[in-house]
Image 1 (cartoon, rainbow, N blue to C red):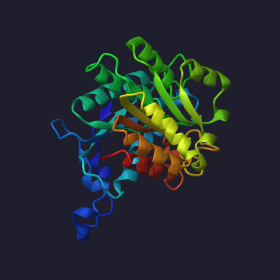
Image 2 (cartoon, helix red, strand yellow):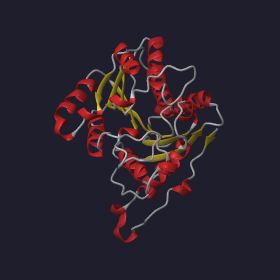
Image 3 (tube, helix red, strand yellow):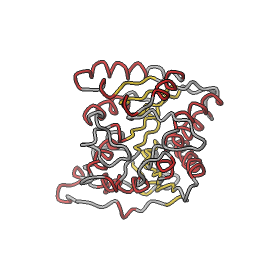
Length: 312
């Protein structure tokens, strides 16, 4: 099921006396409709099924609305239009059909000149996001050089009989093989203690580029920047996804699997901005926000801040 945007969520403080330079997100975001000028378009993926299948703690279905609420009262500093296209909802256990519907919506939005920003939902959103973007690019070029930049404590390269929040990048690798595309995957913030040796072996087989969480500290930032720039130089188009469990648990408690170590927000945000500045970003999303596990909306606020750093 696809739910149209509920614009009532876009409310917040209004500083009318200070004029147009005092706008907030809730005053800028418009409901999506066809034939609008191109801009950034928010699209929610309201889904818990992938997390449930991956034996995680459910609640991510409420993530899209929590992210909108956290965005609503942020100060607006952009210039391009921003639209809300509502949510693609996963009903019962119908994950695969929900992923296909989401991918189709992404393809449509890209075809209209928009840059979609996905609001998760579990990280099963990644398969839907990537295939939607890849299908769009393949309609224009035979073998697009499309890279994936994932900020995540987990590789999400699990093999399973069904799609889940732990399988998307292995499924993407299979898509790339079938489509004759290179699988260009960079995962930043991997927790050695939360990925089995079999997952590291799988990453090696697939030539995944990655850095561990302990390598992504402020003292090592120059090396991390160089690592990211080297990856970006390999691709023409970029899909960026941020799994909020890449952050330390004290910063982002509202996730299915909080990180004991993690990567500090200042580092993550800096690298997100660096990737966006490449000019190659076509699509991005935030995944794994679980509002039922959040504390004082800390995780939602971080997700909103990262989303805000991706708009023009």
